Length: 349
Ligand code: NAD
Ligand code: TYD
Image 1 (cartoon, protein in one colour):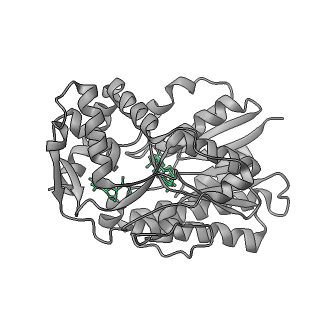
Image 2 (tube, rainbow, N blue to C red):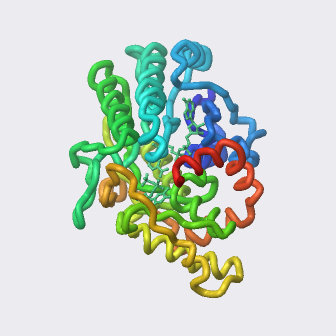
């Protein structure tokens, strides 16, 4: 009998790469993609595998307790890989409650449904919670986040993710639910919604629009190509120890301003512009409140214990990403019409 795995948030940026990886690599699994298709969810991300025999899309909201209970009872999932979330820090600053609902209550609904299904019969079952390095708060100029760094979230987004991590741990302790958690650094790559720094800048460079840099642009992030995150999720799901946490990162720190300049350089070449032309679009704007200075991951544990390391270098990943957006301008045009315009005006007014 096939194992049934439900991946939540599978129509989103990272989720779509995880769904593709699992559908193609594991014909012995049936993969259910459970997604509410919010503004960030897009079935276009999965056109190439939507007719696969071992794939089913289920439109549904993880905050709907009754629906989730019924779905789990009906399908009897053996494993959960939970990515569905409100994921954008800036939106969490204007609407924190939406983050509490999806990221906290949604996660607890899934835990409840999984518990009701298997109770004391947890053999070969697993709840995998995909989380973020932002739960650790901010680093200063030096140091790295390890799995034992204490939680110190600063934004409503990271506070909601931290809370959901705690609930997952609590279900493990209290109800013996087998779980694993990973905390990953900033991802980039194809299908990234253009509210986040890299795809927003690619979109704006193409359209000759200002590139908004918060504050002085000296904030630092550790960037990982999304397909390497999907590979890590595969490794953690299959080989990660029960009740363990794994930090995942790119060993690839960039200050925002340097990253955007590098992007401008590559885009000038791709668009046939003179060197330095796109850089003229850089505009320093009002800072994000509570802006974390620096994130950087020590990914030694996943490297040593599970043998994972990034396979795509940053120059290669960035080139692939630019290439994807240049070849998928219809995708970009579709997701930046309508509600995106209102969001953009409000955020960058
Ligand atoms: P995303 O915003 O691109 O996608 C989120 C997906 O979840 C969308 O498809 C959306 O429709 C779905 N969703 C939202 N609310 C839902 C609900 N109530 N019910 C069902 N589905 C719902 O996010 P992403 O960037 O792909 O992030 C995925 C996960 O990875 C999140 O849990 C995020 O915290 C985590 N993460 C992201 C990053 C990153 O750099 N993007 C880094 C580390 C961890
Ligand atoms: P973002 O892509 O929103 O990811 P996160 O906040 O989860 O790290 O932002 C990455 C960095 O880029 C962060 O320091 C905020 C900054 N940033 C800008 O300077 N301008 C922007 O328009 C956006 C969206 C982000």
